Image (cartoon, rainbow, N blue to C red; front, side):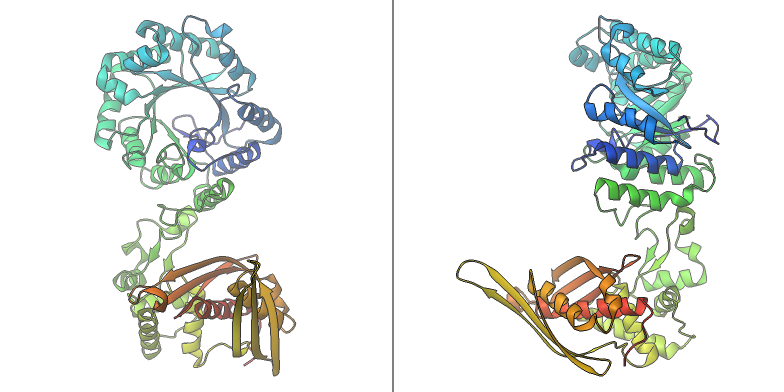
Length: 534
C-alpha cells in the first residue's frame, strides 16, 4: 500500500539499511528480517525505505513481492535499487531495468558512474555513452510513472579528478527528469568543509535538487551529511545505527535528531522522534548485534553521568551537562555510582531508584564512603545498579535486606577418567524459619550453584521461577597476578519484564559468582514485591 505522509516533499529522510546496511560484516538478513526492519523504519516515520536490488538476487525479489502484500506502509515509500542500462543497449530492452518496474516500487534509485576513470575502466565505455545511459534510463522510468532518484557513485573523487564531467552526470540525470541527484562519498574519505564546498558549487552550477550519501571511513559521515544540508542538500541517505560496508554509513538516528532538534526541521511525523531509542534497539535486535552503549542520543550511556562534579551541576539543572532532554529521543538520564561519586550523585541516584534520603547528610556521607571502600576492593556499581540499590537500602534501613540466610555452600567439579566432567553444588540455607539443604548438578560449577539455590528456595518463593540469568562476565582485576588474582563477576538477570545487574568480588571466581547470585535473587524478590523474611 502507498503511504500517505503528513510531511511535505521539501526534505527527504531516505533509509538504506536494507541494502547498504546489510553489507556490514556480520549482518545476514533473511526476508523475514528485512520485513521486520521495514516495519520499524516505517513506524519511525522515514520518508523512503530502500529495499534492495530486485532481479539481482532471489531474496530481494521475494522481499518486494512480500512487502507489497504484508506491509501497510503508513509513512514510508518503498524504493527499489538498480543500475542504469547497459552500454550499447536501450533501457527498454535491459532486463535489470525491467526488473525494477516489475518490483512494483513507485520510487526507484539508480546508481550511475560519475567518476570518469570508473566509466572507462569499470564500465568500459565512453564518457558520452555513460551520460546517455543515465538520461535514457531516467527518462524510460519516468515515462512509466516512477519517481527516480540517481546515486552518483564516487562523486567526490570524480569531482576532484574532473569536476566538469562529474557535473555533467548530475545535469544529465536532472534534465532527464530525476527528482533528486545524490552525491555519494562512496569511499568515505571526505571531510565536512570539503563536502560543504563541493555541494554548494554543484548546486549553484547545475540547479539540480541534491542529496547526500556519506560513508563513515573518516568518522565524519554524520558531520558530512549535515555539512551537505548546510550547503543546500534536501535529501539525506542514512542507515539505522550506521550499519554498512567497512566502518559503516551515516547513522540515521543522530542525523534525524540533529535535523529536528538542532536545525528545527520537521523531518518526522509528529511524536515519532520520541521513538528513536526504541527503534534503534529494536533494529539492533533484528540484526542480532548488541546496541552500542555509547551511541549518540540512543545509547544507554548517552545521558549517563558519573563524576561528582557533573552530578552536583545536574542536581541544580540537568541542562548544565546535557545538550537535550533525553526524553525527546525516548532515552533517560542515568546517574552512575562509582568511587568518583559525591553526595549529589548518591542523592540523585536515590531519587532515581525511588528511595528518599530525606536530605540526611550523615546517611549520604556513609553511602559515599561505603561505595568508595567497596570499589577500592574491586566492586563496580556503575555496571551493577541492583547491587547498589541493595547497598543503599541496607544503609537506609540499618540492616541488609534478607530473604534467606546462608549457612554454607560448596561446588565440586570432577574430572573423570573417560574425559567427562561432573559439576555438583550443595547449599545450606535458612529461610522463613526452615533449614534447607539442596543439591543440584549443572553444566559448570556456577550453573550448579544457581540450580541448587533455586531448588532450595523456589517452594518458599515461587516468584524465583520467573528469573533467568541472561549474561555472565568475569574479569581478573589488576594488582595480583596469576591464580591469586582478585576476580570480579557481573551477572545480568531478567524476570521477563525487566533486567538488572549484580556484582561479586572474591579471590576465586566461584565465590565472586555466589555473591552476585545472592544479590540477583534478593533483588528479584524485592522487585516482585515480596516482604523480607528477616
